[in-house]
Image (cartoon, rainbow, N blue to C red; front, side, top):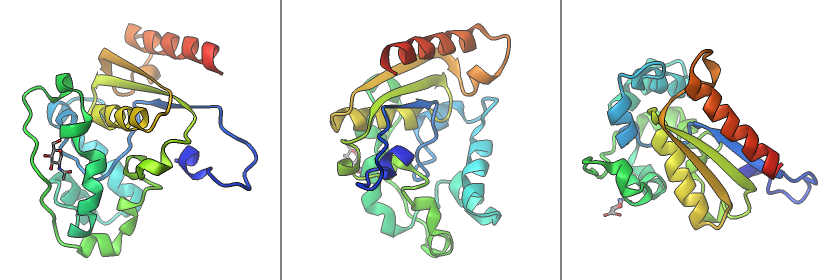
Length: 202
Ligand SMILES: *[C@@H]1O[C@H](CO)[C@@H](O)[C@H](O)[C@H]1NC(C)=O
């Protein structure tokens, strides 16, 4: 988010790189293939993710409930769905038998109370294409067993289309948070990849 907002002539310091480690990037569609496939998978289940997301904006549980059933988006948000359209932004291998359904919109009541949940400052994937092209060299880690997998992959697609130099490291046997748990080889592998990328690019 900072790298998107820093596009300000008064800010003299330019970012050289940005690294996104299994990032959470969007609040619009909580029914992506990765949410469907990994909904019950620890450590980050769908219900926990939705709870964290909704608590960025409010402690009112009605937002959480609406997000869980993907009924939180008002009709005013219809034009944002192209930014999270997994039917066009995910490579075929990640769509694997899932059918894309056009969004159904809920009432505008929640959005009027908590407009932050559709604010690009909370959800970088909702940025316009013209906000993306000046972003720095980018490294993105995604893990197969992670509800947030498709957020990261769709951002990779959008950054590449915008002409940003992106290295995408996808871990077929990875899960959300793998780096922070001790004793998993996968955590060490992710760290080693990341450190060698930093050595070459920083
Ligand atoms: C999503 O993409 C598909 C195919 O690429 C298209 O048919 C559909 O209209 C798009 N939906 C939205 C909401 O952008």
